[in-house]
Length: 359
Image (cartoon, rainbow, N blue to C red; front, side, top):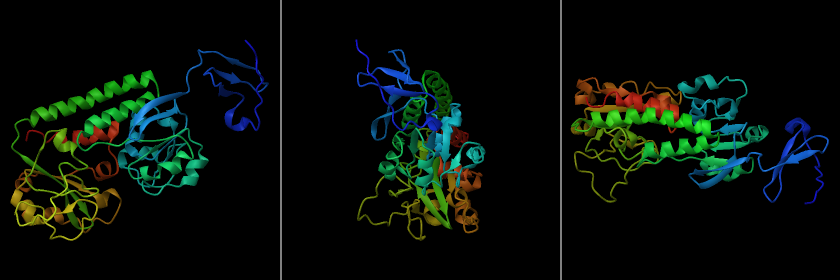
C-alpha cells in the first residue's frame, strides 16, 4: 500500500461546498475536505448509472440535483415521481395547462419554448443532466457541450410499450424507490389500456382523428402520432387512407396512385403542411365515422381560433354518425399537441379517449 498526495487547483468552494467527490482510475471513490484530508472506500455509492435511451446506452449522473427538461412528457414523469425539485430549467413559454403550476415554481428558470431554447440560459444553470424533446433532439451535440444529454423517442407502432420503457429507464436515474413507484403507476395505466381493449374488442364503430390548424382540417393517420388510439386502446380506424406527413404521421401513400377513390383523403382544401393530410368535408362524410377525435393545434399554441370555429359545425360533418350522436370530440388541445410520452400525460390522454370505448 502507498499514499498519494492530491493537489486541487481552482477549487470553487461556492459551487461545490466544502467537500468534493473524486474518483481514482482504479474505481475507488472518496471525499476531499477543505483541509485536504479525505477518505476512500469501496462502500461509497457510484455516482453514475447507465440507461437505455433513443441514442443507445447513456451514462448519466445518479440522482441529479439540477435537470434542464425540454420535453413536457419527461417533466410530468419527473413530477409524478416526486422529483420535481430537481427541475431547474423548463420551456415555460408554452406550458400545457396540466403543467401550469410549474410556470412560477421557485427554482425553475424559463429557458424558452419547445422549439427555441436559450442555450446560454441552459449553460448558466450548470445542469447535471439535460433531457431533450423531439423538437430539440437535432441539437444534441450542442447540449452535450453543456452537460450529459439524453433523448427518449416514442414509437408509433408500439406507443405505450415505448413509453413504458422510457419511463422505466428514466426512473433508474433516481434509484430503487422511484423504480417501485413507477411500477405502480404504470400498472394503473395498464388497467386503462386493458379495459379499453376489452370494450373495443368486437367494435364495429369507426374512428377518425383530425387536426385543426388555422382554418384547415387535416387527417392524422392511424399509424401516426396518435397511433395509440388504435393500437393501444383498440379503436377501429375508418377506411380513409391518409398518407404520411411529418406531424400527421403514418403509412406513406403509394406514389403515382390516382386519388379517384371516393374513400381517399382529398387535397381539395389547401394547407395542412406538416400537420396532417388535408381532408375535404366530402371525404369525411363518405367514410361516415362513428367517432371524430379532434386536436385543435391553433388553440394548443394560443393562436387565433376564429378560423376553426365553424369547421366542426359543417353540415357534411354533422351528417356523419359522429355528428348525429354527439361523438365529434374535441380533445384537450395543449395536452395532445404539446405533450405526451409521460406518466401524467399518457394517463390523461388514455383516460380522455378510452371513456368512448365500446360505444
